[in-house]
Amino acid sequence: MLSKKTRYALKALVVLGKNFGGIPIQISRIAAEEHIPKKFLEQILLDLRNAGLLFSKKGSGGGYGLVKDPSEISVVQILRLTGGPVALLPCVSLNFYQKCEECENEDTCGIRDAFVEVRDATLKILTETSIADLILREKKLLEKFGL
Image (cartoon, rainbow, N blue to C red; front, side):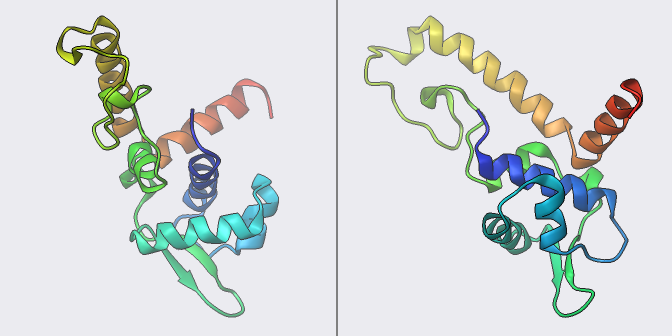
C-alpha cells in the first residue's frame, strides 16, 4: 500500500507536470486542488526539491516547478524518495530487506518465490511509468467519462 506521503507527492507532481515550463505554482494552490494538508505538502515538496526534481521561487509569483520533464520522472523514483518499499514482503525487498522470522529457509520458500515475481513485475511497471504517463492516463479517463 502506498503511504500518504507517496500519494501526495505523486498528486503534486502531476499538478506540476501539467504546468511544466509555466510559471511556478504556489503550495496553497496545490494543497487546495489536491486536498493535501499544506504543512505536509511543504515538507514533501522540500524533499523533492532537495532530490533535484523541483525548483522553488520565493516572493510574489513564487512557488514550485519541475526541473525535469515529467516524462523523465518515474513513479518508482518517487516511491523510493518518499521512503516506500516496492515489495509487498520485507524478505523480497531490494532496499528495505528484512528476514522473515517464521521462515526457515528463504531459498526454498514458495511464498517468497512468488512475491519475488510480484516485486519484479511491479518494479518494471513503476520504472516504466512516468509522471507524464500518469497525466496522460488521467486525461484519457476524463475523456472516457466525459468530464
